[in-house]
Length: 178
Image (cartoon, rainbow, N blue to C red; front, side, top):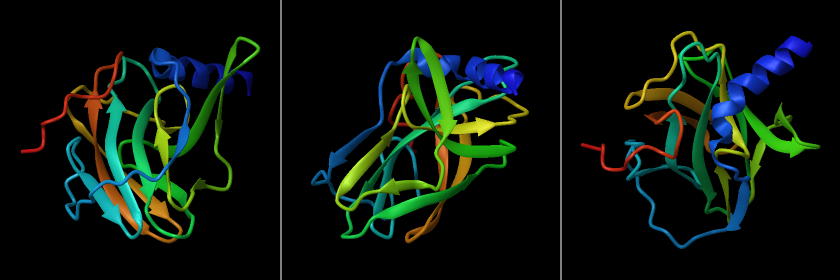
């Protein structure tokens, strides 16, 4: 058990490149896109949900886990819940929280799904809520895309491609959409 916690903590170190936390913000007045192209410049519309800015951090050699990030905006009048995730690139995919507790980084899976409140956005980003890809056999390489399936209670199944950005630093450059 202690080994698993240490392994998860070691795998999460690249996620700490930014000290940020998850946000829930009021709905922005933004145009939506009907395209299935999930590059940095586009958004996916699934029911009342708009999913944008999907990316993963490239992984360092030997790293067994990696982080993914995106923004989910709920333009509807009812909450929706992200209930499951999957990727052919990982044996297990979960939503995790990350926070500092007495100078110790603590990362845990979100139990019961991730609620996307009506009229608000939830941001998954380094240092806070994030997608955790575990049991990764071949690390994510900068510039490649990583497929992931999100399953929502109301919006249903959403297939995304997350662009791999640098192992250390921010999201990948926009404009790789042609």
